[in-house]
Length: 339
Image (cartoon, one colour):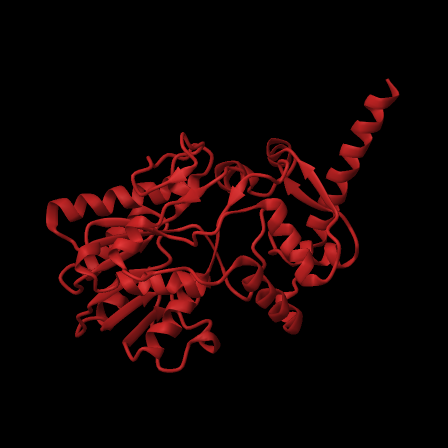
């Protein structure tokens, strides 16, 4: 199979590239080449900026692909460009959408691909919905061979998956745990969530590549494991070898008192219980199963980050904000008791 990935070095795509190359497929990566050190051996680089349409047209002029996948498209205009570039040059075009596009709040916590798409809280999700609508339109009207993939919370060894963190990533939460400081958990921590290791996601994704039954379809790829946020933070603390000190805070309060994107990323996503029905994926990719249990994957992630200081990016601003939120809650509690 001859495939082209636009991007190819991110959390989701990096595991797919590794597995494809291990299986002997011919893989091209179209990117600016700024992260060449992360390119897997055997991948062929088409160095260019996807936004430079004329340059990319030159790069692919003599190529035809079995699959083209765009991992970095977020707005319809970017897909209009992809359509111009790859119409007639690929047997399948895969767009990476988002499970956050599903109805928020949900009318039924069990999510299938038939769950309505609607998210009034997050512009990112609404843009993904608009992208899907455009692609399905050109599939219906022109036969452009589209497959839509919706990941949920997918993680790898380079970042700890969390619900509440700052703009510099998740390390500061782990650092607070290691220092014996309390950490914030949104809500009461009992809502259900699903996290998927990128190696599991990659197996499902590769099963959709070159799959004639996936053309014109939208499919989410997630683990079948459902855990509460309390369990997630307990797993992280256990992997760090410390006792969890949790402070539970209303998601609405957190979103209202921060300049982080908690309205979108929290109210429009992680604050809601979700349980994914992966029946459609398993019909399209017989034998698919997510095999990395969260506690196992988290231990690998924590071990890797502790061994690689470059992923331990401190976030003093977020640390101060956490302390302020916790202090404000304690002050409110004392004020009420004194009345």
